[in-house]
Length: 160
Image (cartoon, rainbow, N blue to C red; front, side, top):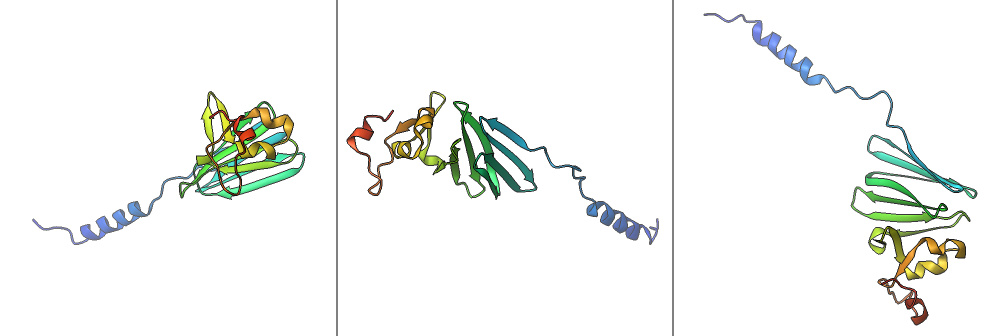
């Protein structure tokens, strides 16, 4: 039995064409997620491996971009405080809280706790938050640092 000499060439051309095909990409990226929280608003979108999110309010806009493993996740506390949580592809987790007065605070996620559906911040954060928004959080005394010590009076306000 003789084999057609053009058969290996035809097989090679067909295999090359099939190998070069790529999967169809969606025409539109996924829609941005958003959350309105009192006078604050957060929006996020993802393009490829890059996530972008913007928090806007009376004092302007803050936009961040990064390669994330998780998030950003938005939450609204007491109808006024907007929180953003995310984890970078390097595994570092972050927590930011934005307030209607234009201020914000941020911590590494290992410094934040959650108990009974409430966010628990280091007690040192309390003095950095305007009085009307302090009740949106509980506070812990686990983060005692020489540069930012916990006084006995502060310790009395700690949940743990």
